[in-house]
Structures are given as C-alpha cells and as structure tokens.
Image: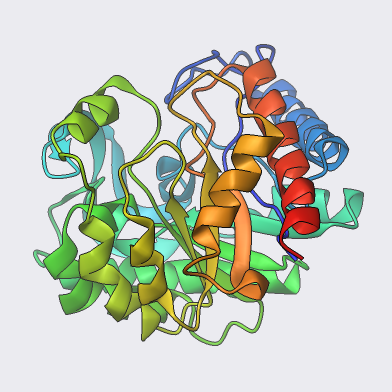
Length: 339
C-alpha cells in the first residue's frame, strides 16, 4: 500500500551539468560526458533506494531537457536553425527545433540508461518520456502542417521506444503531458488518442504525468492567474478515466487543486503529488501523510501512490534528496495511520 515514486527528473550533480537550471549546460563532452551520465544515473538510483523510494527512476540524468532528450534521437528535425516560439499557450518563449521532414527514430533513445538502471536495482523501475501533445507544443513544424498528424507521428515513435524499454525490463513507462493542463479541448479531441497510440501493445504499467509545471518563474506567475481553485483537471479527468492508460500522476501538495476532482479518475491508479517541487521547504513526514489522508477520501488506498508534484530537475540537490526522504517516511507513516 502507498508505493512511492517520483515524477521523473532529479537534479544533476555539479560535476555533470550546471545546477539549478532547467536547460543546464554539460560540464564535459564525448566519452567523458557519457561516463559522467552513467555515474550520475547510478548515484541517483542509490539515493532513491536509500531514501526508501519504491519505484525508482533514472532521474533523467542523460537528458538536457525532458522533451529535447527524446527529440535528439529523431530524424527529420533541424536543431541547427532553431526558432523562437511561445509554448504552453505562450506562457513562456523558447528556442525550439523545427520539423523539416518525415519523422523516424535514428535508433534507440533510452537504452543505455534503462539497461544500466535495470542492472543495478532490484526495485521497480520507471522511465519517462514526453507525451505527443507536449512534444508538438515544444517544436515548430514546417513539414506535416497539421498538429494531429504531427502528434500521431511522434506517438508512433514513442511507442517504438516504449516497446523496446519494456523488453529492457522497465516496469513503468510514463508519458509527461503538461500540455494537457493547457489545451483541455484538444486533449479530448485528439490528445488522448495520441496517448493511446503511444502505449499501444504495452503490457508493462503505463502512466501519464499532468501537473502545473516546474518551480520556475514563468510557472509560478501563471499559477497566480488561476484563482483560488485550479480546475483544469476537471475538464480532462473524465476522458482520461476512459483511456487505456493505467496511472495518472498529478499535482496536489500546496496547490489549489480541489481534491474531490480525484474521484473523476475512477478505475485508475492515482500518483498523488504530496511533495511540492516549487518550494525549497522540506515537507515533514506528518505533512506528507496528511496529504495522503486527504486524497484517500477520493482514491481507494490500493490505487493511491504518493509521488512528487513534478520533476525536480531545477532544484538544489540536497533539498531534493531531503524531500525524497520525507516522501518515503510520510508514506510509511500513512501506512500505519490508514491501514
């Protein structure tokens, strides 16, 4: 009961990349960088195990960014001539690559980190990838001319890698879809269809992560515009409940999400965000357990998985580690309190 996990990303050590940045520059290159990525992956697996996390992640240590870490392995994308584009409904601007031809995978994307992690932990293993809608919202298109066609093309590539990851021994494959909280009508029109395409044929646990973003300035400002109740989930959860995805990861801790919305996910495992990644204040186990208790009013205990609100990539490493420890300790306390 209450198996713990994280949304995906963890801070990169200072010897691997710039710290406290969402788009950090690598500290090395070539073979030295490849070795450093392996070292960082093993380090964070050990840290998660020591903290008591039940379903561990590679921490996305081999990726500079959660979306572009996948795009770098796709043919048909021009990274040399990036363009400035507003993403997440113009919440912030980013320099993005451009789709200039038919999309194909160059080869395996996350094979090295997945096999490395699988060989060094007996815990359940999660690997994350960006979802089709979020990719489309983070790239310019000069080839397909249609968002749905482009998203479905990416969904097919994601499915290819997901099937291979399953063969590598990955237990959970999660697709990150922050765009689902922005384009709610499109989620119902075509976003869930592309998500279902991305998980087609998978037998492992599948998940989608939908939150209100990292603790960066643009996201914090956006949250202030959402009012006293954040009800974006209300528009998409009924459709997600009918989808083929098994788990839904969402934000709860220190947020204005009405927890009664969780009951709209009937039949799904719910990864309840009990750790606030937008604050450096470390939660106490009692606070974590209390959030779990509140969510239990709407989620069956066998379907509730305590998690972080979002990834921790831009966070201070020691604070992130302390929050992981609080997550595991809070879940342990909740097991005693709500058994």
